Length: 470
Image (cartoon, rainbow, N blue to C red; front, side):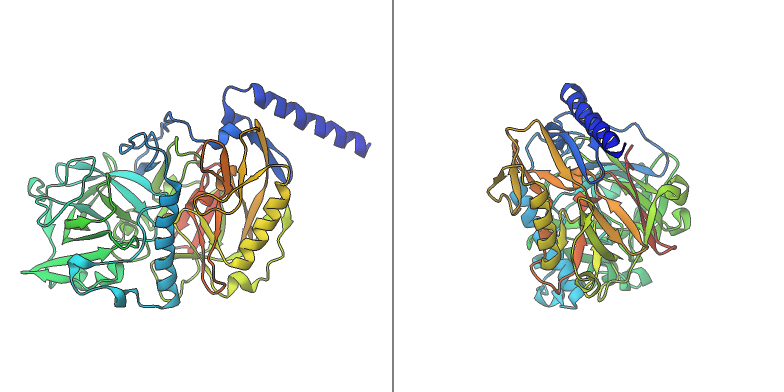
Protein backbone atom coordinates (compact mmCIF):
# COMPACT_ATOMS: atom_id res chain seq x y z
CA UNK A 1 0.00 0.00 0.00
CA UNK A 2 2.85 2.37 0.86
CA UNK A 3 4.56 1.74 -2.48
CA UNK A 4 1.28 2.33 -4.29
CA UNK A 5 0.87 5.69 -2.54
CA UNK A 6 4.42 6.68 -3.41
CA UNK A 7 4.04 5.81 -7.08
CA UNK A 8 0.75 7.68 -7.19
CA UNK A 9 2.46 10.79 -5.74
CA UNK A 10 5.25 10.55 -8.32
CA UNK A 11 2.70 10.41 -11.13
CA UNK A 12 0.94 13.49 -9.74
CA UNK A 13 4.22 15.42 -9.71
CA UNK A 14 5.02 14.34 -13.26
CA UNK A 15 1.57 15.36 -14.44
CA UNK A 16 1.90 18.75 -12.71
CA UNK A 17 5.27 19.29 -14.40
CA UNK A 18 3.68 18.52 -17.78
CA UNK A 19 0.98 21.07 -17.10
CA UNK A 20 3.68 23.66 -16.42
CA UNK A 21 5.03 23.19 -19.93
CA UNK A 22 1.64 24.19 -21.27
CA UNK A 23 1.02 26.99 -18.82
CA UNK A 24 0.72 30.57 -20.02
CA UNK A 25 1.58 32.08 -16.64
CA UNK A 26 4.96 30.61 -15.67
CA UNK A 27 4.85 31.92 -12.12
CA UNK A 28 1.68 29.91 -11.45
CA UNK A 29 3.45 26.67 -12.42
CA UNK A 30 5.54 25.81 -9.39
CA UNK A 31 5.54 22.20 -8.21
CA UNK A 32 6.47 21.71 -4.57
CA UNK A 33 7.98 18.53 -3.24
CA UNK A 34 9.11 17.88 0.32
CA UNK A 35 12.73 18.81 -0.37
CA UNK A 36 12.79 20.37 -3.83
CA UNK A 37 10.84 22.62 -6.17
CA UNK A 38 10.38 22.12 -9.91
CA UNK A 39 9.54 25.15 -11.99
CA UNK A 40 9.94 26.54 -15.52
CA UNK A 41 13.35 28.05 -16.23
CA UNK A 42 11.62 31.09 -17.74
CA UNK A 43 9.98 31.88 -14.39
CA UNK A 44 13.42 32.65 -12.92
CA UNK A 45 13.95 35.55 -15.30
CA UNK A 46 12.29 38.95 -14.85
CA UNK A 47 9.64 40.08 -17.30
CA UNK A 48 10.20 43.26 -19.35
CA UNK A 49 6.63 44.23 -18.43
CA UNK A 50 5.69 45.68 -15.05
CA UNK A 51 3.24 43.64 -12.98
CA UNK A 52 2.17 46.42 -10.65
CA UNK A 53 0.39 45.91 -7.35
CA UNK A 54 -2.96 47.58 -6.84
CA UNK A 55 -2.50 48.04 -3.09
CA UNK A 56 -2.61 51.70 -2.02
CA UNK A 57 -3.49 51.62 1.68
CA UNK A 58 -2.69 54.55 3.95
CA UNK A 59 0.82 54.47 5.46
CA UNK A 60 1.88 52.08 2.67
CA UNK A 61 4.41 52.98 -0.02
CA UNK A 62 4.85 51.10 -3.29
CA UNK A 63 8.31 49.57 -3.36
CA UNK A 64 10.17 48.77 -6.60
CA UNK A 65 13.59 47.52 -7.62
CA UNK A 66 15.66 50.36 -9.10
CA UNK A 67 16.17 48.34 -12.33
CA UNK A 68 12.49 47.34 -12.56
CA UNK A 69 10.20 48.27 -15.47
CA UNK A 70 7.89 49.43 -12.66
CA UNK A 71 10.49 51.99 -11.54
CA UNK A 72 10.24 55.67 -12.52
CA UNK A 73 14.00 55.47 -13.13
CA UNK A 74 13.85 52.47 -15.51
CA UNK A 75 15.81 53.07 -18.73
CA UNK A 76 15.56 49.60 -20.26
CA UNK A 77 19.15 48.66 -19.47
CA UNK A 78 19.81 45.15 -18.08
CA UNK A 79 21.22 44.68 -14.59
CA UNK A 80 25.02 44.88 -14.49
CA UNK A 81 25.73 42.03 -12.07
CA UNK A 82 29.45 42.73 -11.92
CA UNK A 83 28.80 46.31 -10.82
CA UNK A 84 26.10 45.08 -8.44
CA UNK A 85 28.56 42.76 -6.67
CA UNK A 86 31.25 45.46 -6.50
CA UNK A 87 28.79 47.82 -4.83
CA UNK A 88 27.80 45.01 -2.48
CA UNK A 89 31.41 44.37 -1.47
CA UNK A 90 31.83 48.04 -0.53
CA UNK A 91 28.75 47.97 1.67
CA UNK A 92 29.73 44.68 3.31
CA UNK A 93 33.20 46.02 4.14
CA UNK A 94 31.68 49.04 5.86
CA UNK A 95 29.24 46.93 7.90
CA UNK A 96 32.10 44.65 8.92
CA UNK A 97 34.29 47.59 9.95
CA UNK A 98 31.55 48.98 12.18
CA UNK A 99 30.81 45.66 13.85
CA UNK A 100 34.48 44.80 14.36
CA UNK A 101 35.07 48.13 16.05
CA UNK A 102 37.46 49.41 13.40
CA UNK A 103 37.22 53.15 13.05
CA UNK A 104 36.13 53.83 9.50
CA UNK A 105 36.19 57.52 10.37
CA UNK A 106 39.96 57.42 10.73
CA UNK A 107 40.28 56.95 6.99
CA UNK A 108 38.09 59.97 6.24
CA UNK A 109 39.67 63.28 5.42
CA UNK A 110 38.68 66.34 7.40
CA UNK A 111 37.39 68.10 4.29
CA UNK A 112 33.66 67.48 4.01
CA UNK A 113 34.00 67.66 0.24
CA UNK A 114 36.38 64.69 0.28
CA UNK A 115 34.29 62.25 2.34
CA UNK A 116 35.06 58.65 1.44
CA UNK A 117 33.67 55.25 2.41
CA UNK A 118 30.82 54.68 4.76
CA UNK A 119 28.71 52.00 3.10
CA UNK A 120 27.40 51.15 -0.33
CA UNK A 121 24.06 52.68 -1.19
CA UNK A 122 23.97 50.80 -4.48
CA UNK A 123 23.68 47.10 -5.08
CA UNK A 124 20.23 45.67 -5.63
CA UNK A 125 18.46 48.66 -4.14
CA UNK A 126 14.75 49.31 -3.82
CA UNK A 127 12.90 52.58 -4.27
CA UNK A 128 9.91 54.28 -2.65
CA UNK A 129 8.24 57.57 -3.52
CA UNK A 130 7.44 60.01 -0.71
CA UNK A 131 6.10 63.57 -0.64
CA UNK A 132 8.16 66.42 0.82
CA UNK A 133 7.21 70.02 1.54
CA UNK A 134 4.08 72.19 1.41
CA UNK A 135 2.76 71.87 -1.22
CA UNK A 136 4.31 68.42 -1.43
CA UNK A 137 6.72 67.40 -4.13
CA UNK A 138 7.06 63.70 -4.95
CA UNK A 139 10.60 62.32 -4.59
CA UNK A 140 11.91 58.83 -5.35
CA UNK A 141 14.32 57.62 -2.65
CA UNK A 142 16.31 54.46 -1.95
CA UNK A 143 14.96 52.81 1.20
CA UNK A 144 17.60 51.45 3.56
CA UNK A 145 17.40 49.64 6.92
CA UNK A 146 21.13 50.19 7.42
CA UNK A 147 21.05 53.98 7.08
CA UNK A 148 19.60 56.47 9.53
CA UNK A 149 19.59 59.83 7.76
CA UNK A 150 16.88 60.62 5.23
CA UNK A 151 18.13 63.16 2.68
CA UNK A 152 17.40 64.59 -0.73
CA UNK A 153 19.13 66.95 -3.12
CA UNK A 154 18.11 70.58 -2.67
CA UNK A 155 18.21 73.74 -4.72
CA UNK A 156 20.20 75.89 -5.21
CA UNK A 157 22.77 73.02 -5.21
CA UNK A 158 25.34 75.43 -3.83
CA UNK A 159 28.24 73.18 -4.86
CA UNK A 160 26.98 70.25 -6.94
CA UNK A 161 24.01 67.99 -7.63
CA UNK A 162 23.96 64.78 -9.68
CA UNK A 163 21.29 64.05 -12.30
CA UNK A 164 17.94 62.83 -10.95
CA UNK A 165 14.63 61.92 -12.61
CA UNK A 166 12.39 64.38 -10.74
CA UNK A 167 12.86 68.12 -10.28
CA UNK A 168 15.29 68.82 -7.44
CA UNK A 169 13.53 69.86 -4.23
CA UNK A 170 13.45 73.62 -3.75
CA UNK A 171 13.00 74.55 -0.07
CA UNK A 172 12.24 78.18 -0.97
CA UNK A 173 8.98 76.96 -2.54
CA UNK A 174 7.79 75.20 0.62
CA UNK A 175 5.98 76.99 3.45
CA UNK A 176 6.90 74.25 5.98
CA UNK A 177 10.69 74.17 5.51
CA UNK A 178 13.00 75.37 8.30
CA UNK A 179 16.73 75.03 8.94
CA UNK A 180 17.84 73.48 12.24
CA UNK A 181 20.02 75.65 14.48
CA UNK A 182 23.54 74.60 15.46
CA UNK A 183 22.53 74.92 19.09
CA UNK A 184 19.56 72.51 18.73
CA UNK A 185 19.94 69.15 20.53
CA UNK A 186 19.17 67.30 17.30
CA UNK A 187 22.22 68.90 15.66
CA UNK A 188 24.56 67.69 18.40
CA UNK A 189 23.02 64.20 18.22
CA UNK A 190 23.36 64.02 14.44
CA UNK A 191 26.75 62.19 14.35
CA UNK A 192 25.22 58.98 15.78
CA UNK A 193 23.31 58.54 12.53
CA UNK A 194 25.89 59.88 10.06
CA UNK A 195 29.20 58.76 11.60
CA UNK A 196 30.49 62.29 10.94
CA UNK A 197 30.57 65.36 13.19
CA UNK A 198 27.97 68.02 12.49
CA UNK A 199 29.20 71.48 11.50
CA UNK A 200 27.87 75.01 11.28
CA UNK A 201 27.26 77.45 8.48
CA UNK A 202 26.53 80.61 10.40
CA UNK A 203 23.92 79.42 12.88
CA UNK A 204 22.62 76.59 10.65
CA UNK A 205 23.44 72.93 11.31
CA UNK A 206 25.34 71.19 8.49
CA UNK A 207 25.46 67.40 8.02
CA UNK A 208 27.91 65.29 6.02
CA UNK A 209 28.02 61.60 5.23
CA UNK A 210 29.63 59.30 2.66
CA UNK A 211 29.09 55.85 1.16
CA UNK A 212 31.10 52.69 0.68
CA UNK A 213 31.76 52.90 -3.05
CA UNK A 214 34.58 55.30 -2.06
CA UNK A 215 33.02 58.06 -4.15
CA UNK A 216 29.44 58.86 -3.18
CA UNK A 217 28.61 61.49 -0.57
CA UNK A 218 26.07 64.10 0.48
CA UNK A 219 26.59 67.35 2.41
CA UNK A 220 24.02 70.00 3.22
CA UNK A 221 21.73 71.69 5.70
CA UNK A 222 20.03 69.72 8.47
CA UNK A 223 16.42 70.90 8.37
CA UNK A 224 12.79 70.14 9.18
CA UNK A 225 9.98 69.62 6.71
CA UNK A 226 6.62 67.90 6.27
CA UNK A 227 7.05 64.36 4.93
CA UNK A 228 3.96 62.79 3.35
CA UNK A 229 3.25 59.08 2.83
CA UNK A 230 -0.36 59.37 1.67
CA UNK A 231 -3.23 61.83 1.51
CA UNK A 232 -3.95 61.19 5.19
CA UNK A 233 -0.49 60.30 6.54
CA UNK A 234 2.07 63.06 7.07
CA UNK A 235 4.88 63.71 9.57
CA UNK A 236 5.37 67.39 10.39
CA UNK A 237 8.70 68.74 11.61
CA UNK A 238 10.56 65.78 10.11
CA UNK A 239 14.34 66.16 10.38
CA UNK A 240 16.19 65.46 7.13
CA UNK A 241 19.25 66.36 5.10
CA UNK A 242 18.82 69.04 2.42
CA UNK A 243 21.81 68.24 0.20
CA UNK A 244 23.79 71.11 -1.32
CA UNK A 245 26.82 69.06 -2.39
CA UNK A 246 26.04 65.56 -3.63
CA UNK A 247 28.04 63.30 -5.88
CA UNK A 248 29.64 60.00 -6.73
CA UNK A 249 27.75 57.10 -8.26
CA UNK A 250 24.26 58.25 -7.35
CA UNK A 251 22.04 58.45 -10.39
CA UNK A 252 18.35 59.00 -11.02
CA UNK A 253 16.91 58.76 -7.52
CA UNK A 254 16.57 61.86 -5.35
CA UNK A 255 18.18 60.63 -2.11
CA UNK A 256 17.86 58.09 0.69
CA UNK A 257 15.06 57.02 3.07
CA UNK A 258 16.69 55.89 6.34
CA UNK A 259 15.08 53.19 8.54
CA UNK A 260 18.02 52.18 10.75
CA UNK A 261 18.07 52.08 14.56
CA UNK A 262 18.85 55.70 15.39
CA UNK A 263 16.91 58.70 16.65
CA UNK A 264 17.12 60.52 13.29
CA UNK A 265 15.70 57.60 11.28
CA UNK A 266 12.14 57.72 10.00
CA UNK A 267 11.26 54.81 12.31
CA UNK A 268 12.11 56.84 15.41
CA UNK A 269 10.84 60.20 14.19
CA UNK A 270 7.44 58.70 13.36
CA UNK A 271 7.27 56.60 16.55
CA UNK A 272 4.31 58.46 18.07
CA UNK A 273 2.28 57.79 14.91
CA UNK A 274 3.40 54.29 13.91
CA UNK A 275 4.83 52.91 17.16
CA UNK A 276 8.16 51.80 15.60
CA UNK A 277 6.41 49.08 13.58
CA UNK A 278 7.08 48.62 9.89
CA UNK A 279 7.17 45.86 7.31
CA UNK A 280 8.12 45.42 3.70
CA UNK A 281 7.87 42.86 0.94
CA UNK A 282 10.57 42.75 -1.72
CA UNK A 283 8.91 41.28 -4.82
CA UNK A 284 10.16 37.89 -6.07
CA UNK A 285 10.87 39.43 -9.48
CA UNK A 286 12.30 42.81 -10.41
CA UNK A 287 9.38 43.15 -12.84
CA UNK A 288 6.78 43.36 -10.06
CA UNK A 289 6.16 45.67 -7.12
CA UNK A 290 6.26 45.23 -3.36
CA UNK A 291 5.43 47.55 -0.48
CA UNK A 292 6.76 49.32 2.59
CA UNK A 293 4.15 49.73 5.35
CA UNK A 294 4.24 51.60 8.68
CA UNK A 295 2.13 50.91 11.75
CA UNK A 296 1.02 47.76 13.50
CA UNK A 297 -2.53 47.86 12.17
CA UNK A 298 -1.49 47.11 8.59
CA UNK A 299 0.58 44.05 9.48
CA UNK A 300 -0.36 40.40 9.28
CA UNK A 301 1.97 39.44 12.11
CA UNK A 302 -0.36 36.67 13.31
CA UNK A 303 0.82 34.50 10.41
CA UNK A 304 4.49 35.51 10.65
CA UNK A 305 7.22 33.58 12.47
CA UNK A 306 9.39 35.77 14.71
CA UNK A 307 13.00 35.77 15.79
CA UNK A 308 14.45 38.16 18.41
CA UNK A 309 16.36 41.26 17.32
CA UNK A 310 19.88 40.79 18.62
CA UNK A 311 22.39 43.43 19.59
CA UNK A 312 25.15 44.17 17.09
CA UNK A 313 28.47 44.92 18.76
CA UNK A 314 30.04 48.34 18.15
CA UNK A 315 27.10 49.67 16.12
CA UNK A 316 23.50 50.17 17.17
CA UNK A 317 22.41 51.17 13.64
CA UNK A 318 21.85 47.63 12.39
CA UNK A 319 19.13 45.08 13.03
CA UNK A 320 20.79 41.90 14.29
CA UNK A 321 19.36 38.38 13.95
CA UNK A 322 20.76 35.02 15.06
CA UNK A 323 21.18 32.31 12.42
CA UNK A 324 21.28 28.86 14.05
CA UNK A 325 21.46 26.57 11.02
CA UNK A 326 20.87 25.97 7.30
CA UNK A 327 19.23 23.04 5.50
CA UNK A 328 19.49 22.07 1.83
CA UNK A 329 16.95 19.65 0.40
CA UNK A 330 15.56 19.01 3.86
CA UNK A 331 18.94 17.95 5.26
CA UNK A 332 20.61 20.11 7.95
CA UNK A 333 24.15 21.13 7.02
CA UNK A 334 26.96 20.09 9.33
CA UNK A 335 27.95 23.56 10.52
CA UNK A 336 29.29 24.04 14.08
CA UNK A 337 26.94 26.32 16.04
CA UNK A 338 29.87 28.59 16.93
CA UNK A 339 30.31 29.55 13.26
CA UNK A 340 27.29 31.84 13.59
CA UNK A 341 27.13 32.50 17.34
CA UNK A 342 30.69 33.79 17.67
CA UNK A 343 30.30 36.63 15.17
CA UNK A 344 26.56 37.32 14.88
CA UNK A 345 24.45 38.27 11.88
CA UNK A 346 22.77 41.36 10.43
CA UNK A 347 19.63 41.58 8.29
CA UNK A 348 20.06 44.34 5.72
CA UNK A 349 17.81 45.67 2.96
CA UNK A 350 20.75 47.21 1.07
CA UNK A 351 23.08 44.20 0.85
CA UNK A 352 22.18 42.14 -2.20
CA UNK A 353 23.55 38.64 -1.58
CA UNK A 354 23.62 36.86 1.78
CA UNK A 355 27.18 36.70 3.11
CA UNK A 356 28.15 33.58 5.09
CA UNK A 357 31.33 32.64 6.96
CA UNK A 358 33.57 30.35 4.81
CA UNK A 359 32.70 27.20 6.77
CA UNK A 360 28.97 27.77 6.34
CA UNK A 361 29.23 28.86 2.72
CA UNK A 362 31.38 25.87 1.78
CA UNK A 363 28.85 23.47 3.33
CA UNK A 364 25.95 25.20 1.56
CA UNK A 365 27.74 25.25 -1.80
CA UNK A 366 28.73 21.56 -1.61
CA UNK A 367 25.20 20.43 -0.73
CA UNK A 368 23.67 22.62 -3.44
CA UNK A 369 26.08 21.38 -6.12
CA UNK A 370 25.32 17.79 -5.18
CA UNK A 371 21.58 18.41 -5.42
CA UNK A 372 22.07 20.11 -8.82
CA UNK A 373 24.41 17.45 -10.23
CA UNK A 374 22.05 16.72 -13.14
CA UNK A 375 22.63 20.22 -14.54
CA UNK A 376 25.66 21.45 -16.44
CA UNK A 377 27.83 23.83 -14.44
CA UNK A 378 29.19 26.88 -16.22
CA UNK A 379 32.17 29.12 -15.51
CA UNK A 380 31.93 31.48 -12.53
CA UNK A 381 30.24 34.76 -13.40
CA UNK A 382 30.08 38.24 -11.86
CA UNK A 383 31.59 37.08 -8.57
CA UNK A 384 29.36 33.98 -8.23
CA UNK A 385 31.25 30.67 -8.14
CA UNK A 386 28.37 28.18 -8.52
CA UNK A 387 26.64 28.74 -11.85
CA UNK A 388 24.64 26.62 -14.29
CA UNK A 389 23.94 26.72 -18.01
CA UNK A 390 20.19 26.13 -18.31
CA UNK A 391 19.93 27.01 -22.01
CA UNK A 392 18.89 23.45 -22.87
CA UNK A 393 16.40 23.07 -20.02
CA UNK A 394 12.71 23.90 -19.99
CA UNK A 395 12.19 22.94 -16.34
CA UNK A 396 14.60 23.05 -13.42
CA UNK A 397 14.41 21.30 -10.05
CA UNK A 398 15.95 23.32 -7.23
CA UNK A 399 16.62 22.01 -3.71
CA UNK A 400 14.76 23.79 -0.93
CA UNK A 401 17.05 25.98 1.19
CA UNK A 402 15.86 26.70 4.72
CA UNK A 403 17.41 29.10 7.24
CA UNK A 404 16.87 28.48 10.95
CA UNK A 405 16.86 31.45 13.32
CA UNK A 406 16.70 31.79 17.08
CA UNK A 407 13.12 31.33 18.24
CA UNK A 408 13.35 28.70 16.96
CA UNK A 409 11.89 29.41 13.52
CA UNK A 410 12.55 28.01 10.04
CA UNK A 411 12.35 30.20 6.93
CA UNK A 412 12.12 28.32 3.61
CA UNK A 413 13.51 30.58 0.91
CA UNK A 414 11.54 31.41 -2.21
CA UNK A 415 13.21 30.12 -5.37
CA UNK A 416 13.96 33.76 -6.27
CA UNK A 417 16.16 33.79 -3.17
CA UNK A 418 18.18 30.75 -4.27
CA UNK A 419 19.16 31.34 -7.92
CA UNK A 420 19.94 34.67 -9.57
CA UNK A 421 19.93 35.11 -13.37
CA UNK A 422 23.22 36.49 -14.69
CA UNK A 423 22.61 36.04 -18.43
CA UNK A 424 19.68 34.79 -20.50
CA UNK A 425 20.85 31.21 -19.98
CA UNK A 426 23.01 31.31 -16.86
CA UNK A 427 21.81 31.03 -13.26
CA UNK A 428 24.03 31.25 -10.17
CA UNK A 429 23.69 30.35 -6.51
CA UNK A 430 22.77 33.63 -4.81
CA UNK A 431 25.14 33.44 -1.84
CA UNK A 432 28.69 34.53 -1.10
CA UNK A 433 31.45 33.89 1.43
CA UNK A 434 32.62 36.59 3.82
CA UNK A 435 36.14 35.22 3.29
CA UNK A 436 36.80 35.46 7.02
CA UNK A 437 35.44 33.26 9.83
CA UNK A 438 35.49 36.25 12.19
CA UNK A 439 33.31 38.41 9.92
CA UNK A 440 29.56 38.68 10.65
CA UNK A 441 26.98 37.08 8.39
CA UNK A 442 24.70 39.45 6.48
CA UNK A 443 21.22 38.27 5.48
CA UNK A 444 20.76 40.04 2.15
CA UNK A 445 17.74 41.27 0.24
CA UNK A 446 17.69 38.51 -2.40
CA UNK A 447 16.98 35.97 0.35
CA UNK A 448 14.24 38.22 1.74
CA UNK A 449 12.32 38.29 -1.55
CA UNK A 450 8.61 37.38 -1.49
CA UNK A 451 8.41 37.50 2.35
CA UNK A 452 6.68 40.15 4.38
CA UNK A 453 9.52 41.05 6.73
CA UNK A 454 8.00 42.51 9.89
CA UNK A 455 10.01 44.81 12.19
CA UNK A 456 8.41 44.92 15.64
CA UNK A 457 11.01 47.22 17.17
CA UNK A 458 9.32 47.77 20.57
CA UNK A 459 8.76 44.02 20.83
CA UNK A 460 12.41 43.37 19.93
CA UNK A 461 11.62 40.93 17.14
CA UNK A 462 11.63 40.46 13.36
CA UNK A 463 9.09 38.26 11.59
CA UNK A 464 8.88 36.48 8.24
CA UNK A 465 5.59 35.76 6.48
CA UNK A 466 5.78 33.63 3.30
CA UNK A 467 4.09 34.89 0.14
CA UNK A 468 3.94 38.34 1.71
CA UNK A 469 3.65 40.23 -1.58
CA UNK A 470 0.44 38.42 -2.56
